[in-house]
Length: 416
Image (cartoon, rainbow, N blue to C red):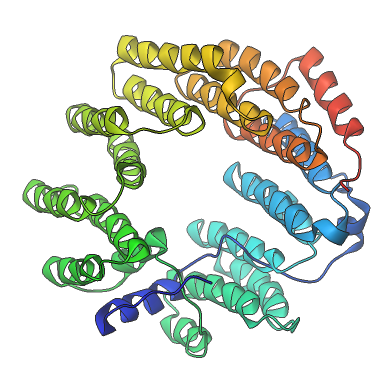
């Protein structure tokens, strides 16, 4: 794992961040569902029925990866589907699928579901599923860091419920480095009772280390503080200035992600004037970057969605048209395993802008692009990601696309 030198204050923040972190690489123990690659049928009422169908198809696609030697690929793809189920509110289906994950990602999948229950105020359900996560964390496969990731994710759940003693107990023996997980750091800053000056001092210490990952963590921390103090114009202006100063030490692409996240928050707040200023900043960053099409097109598509939702529909359509033109003219420059995902970002932007019919036709192309790679691994990943994407963005497949999705799913053979 990556390690870096940090000051005592920075190290303290990282440890705290771990305490509230839901690891992106989590879990243990397999089940018959996991090894069979099938999910059981369950009754799901409309309007979730078609989304559940897509998510089941995605899970079964992910499960075509054989456990040996593809347990990592299989589990990562399965966890993506579990996260999708949680996001659309299908928690029972999510838990059913999580039960079938065969490695340590099973545990963090449980904690993702638990966090959803906590947000709904269903702490009894969260406690129930955290017991399942604990069983995963107790599994000893010779890699302590895997169990540590699960415990860290559990600690975040307990902290969210206000059970800080349990969270600290879980973390006290967890020797794990976040490698600058800035989003987790932002969670910490939002949960710890400190003044803004104290929080800014912690971030300045992080940035002063000169280490790439620590500066990156500080940027995400500033983004979190910006959202926390958004209603106070003076405070958010100060935070914005500190963010810009810290970002000078890193490539613009990393700052771009943070600015996009801040913009999404402001758009949802309905503050169009501020959102458009942030969008201008993001556009400037994108213009100054020398990103590949694989990176620039999804960023441009995301900017188009934000611009449209900030009240500038014509400008948003213009940006999205530019993204599509870049794809059409440069698709051959992309590796075959990059094409479906790149075009998928444009479909998602259209869906977010309310252009569902256009999004549907683009998704039709996305599924076909996902079949062209001779390697089965990217085909499985593209199929899974596309099914989840449609479900999350509310794009219901018509009969012909649904039939094609079913056919592609059946044609996914075991990866070698």
